[in-house]
Length: 115
Length: 114
Image (cartoon, rainbow over all chains, first blue to last red; front, side, top):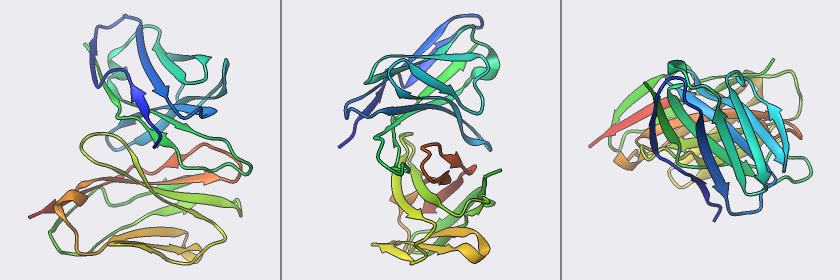
C-alpha cells in the first residue's frame, strides 16, 4: 500500500513567519502534488513536481514555493504566512505510466492556522 | 476550459436509504478520465474509482455503483443501503488524457444518520 505522510496534522503559525509543510511518500512515485482545500472551493492545485528539482505552478501558486531535493520528499513553503493561507493542505503522489491518469494517493492533510 | 460541478453541497439520509451523488463535467477533449474520491473525517482522500471516456459501462462494487453518461456529461455515484460509515465528503474529479492534473468539484458532504 502506498503511504503518503504529511509531517503535521495541525499547525499554528503567526503572520509573517516562514512555514514549511513536509510530505514524504514511500512508493518511489515520480509525481507529487500540493493542494489546498477550502469550504465551497474543493481542492485547488498549488504546485506539482514530476521529478527531483522539477516543479510546475498549479492554479494558485501565489505566496507559495516548493522544494523537491529527493524523490520521496516534496515540501511546500509559505514564504511569509498570511491569514488568508489558513487552510487544509493536502499532499498527493502518483506513479507515471504511459498515458498517465493514474489515481493520486493522498496524505492525511495538514490543517494550518495563521494567526 | 475544464470544469467539474457537484451541485449538492450537503445531503443527509437515514441509514439504509439509497443516495445518489451528482457530478457534471465540462471538457472539449474527447479522451479524459473521471474519478471519485471519498474524504472521511480523518482527512485523507481515498480513491474509489477511475473511468475513461470510452468506457460507458456502469460499474458496481458492493454497495457502490457509478453511472457514466457522456450524452449528459455526468458521472453519478449511488450508494445503496447507506451506512453511518459512508458519512464523508465525496469529490468527483476530471483529468485530461496523458496529464496527471486533477480538476476537482467542490465536493458533496454526505451525512448518514442511524
